[in-house]
Length: 460
Image (tube, rainbow, N blue to C red; front, side, top):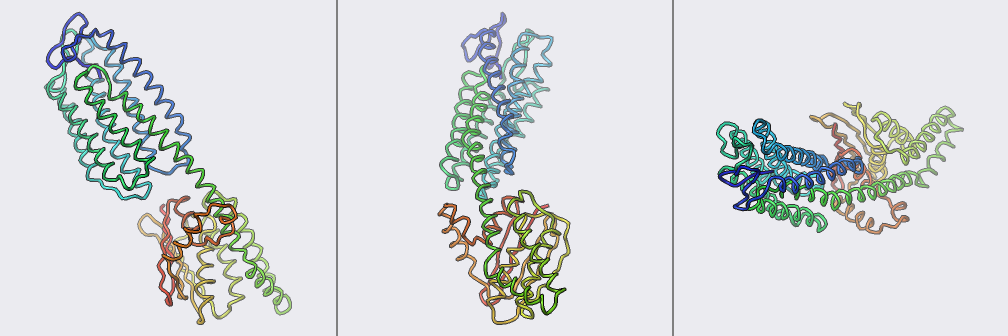
């Protein structure tokens, strides 16, 4: 923002910045071009928001809120500079200068929220203590600016239209400095949860912003802080969000390979052979049942193939229909040994294609199929607050969940296409799809000798 010395202004278009006389024309020639350049950079950033349109991270939304507030800060700074020396418009300059200060406070506080949300998006530990303290400081600073309208404790304008800062102005700068220091402390606390490529831009943002605020203590007529914030937003965009875009593309490729892995996993030769053998037997014994079984078999295959190209969630009814085709085929094989119960209290929702069938198959093939006793698989759905909860429960042999995921993750370290496509990713692949495609969650509880419960939570 534009400002004069701490106590008085000088007529004839001169501003005293800590004892150094500076013509307002020179001040405008420095600030306005810098503000215009920053505004252009922000517009470019907003345009490149399209690069991140597939991202579901809330930190991306906060980032572009910061860009919008920075835009307001630069516009108001230009307005304040253009109104210098126009006493008839002092009321307007009070408004735009106050807006400039408030924008700066919110920009600093939003950065702390950005850090918290960035950690949350990455499923990393985070604390709201510092962010709450920062927001409290920001609110207090905003109230100080509002009070300024009545007692001019922060800044004022004289009869010639020139601005003079009061003691509380430096209190506002100190508050802004304190907020940025707290943001830096927040990053340091979360240091071990951030990769080097993440730590560097966040810390650089804080350090450069802190230095800019300190410079405004000595040269408060030049908008160091707003300019520094905009440059750092560009830096964070290039270092973090463009990198996120690259990772997003890589993640999509991995999910596509997982889709193929799941589909191939369902087309196991022994399952196909058993199903076709049973259908052949029924052709002689019960042609009508053979026809129904052949219909189930064809729908099952079509469902698996369609899932490979499906990029959007499907209805639960479609998923449960696919499960029904698979269950019918397995019941031909297991007969009295397999009992499947459907307890569906909620059916009006969407989930990723080929989510339920692999879970039911795991329960039947690895749970009930490997047990000497008859077993039951229960498929249930219910609404819990704003979430849909799906449970696949079996009383089969159970397994070691930690060992399964450890082995799977070790297998995925080999990123070769053959491994990704031919590996039996099963539960791991479904878990990734649920998390990435619908921001859901998959949890597994299993006890050897007692059975397994797989819980899928889908936010609505």
